[in-house]
Length: 47
Image (cartoon, rainbow, N blue to C red; front, side, top):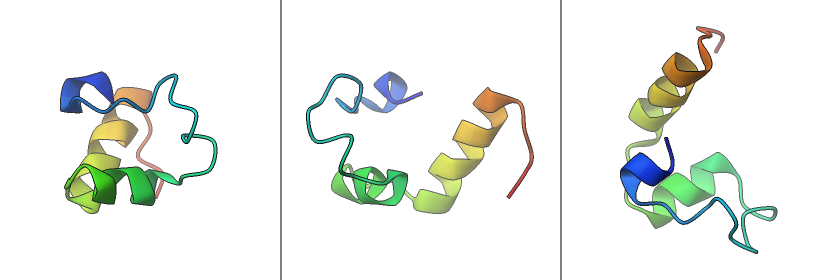
């Protein structure tokens, strides 16, 4: 999912300090839409 958005989070040394909200903002992604994609990929609809 992260690579599909060209996010370098996997393996990035800063990833352990950032929340998903921070990363989405850094890459200019809509947070709600990105979280929905993550939930779908994880197979859960939990909010």
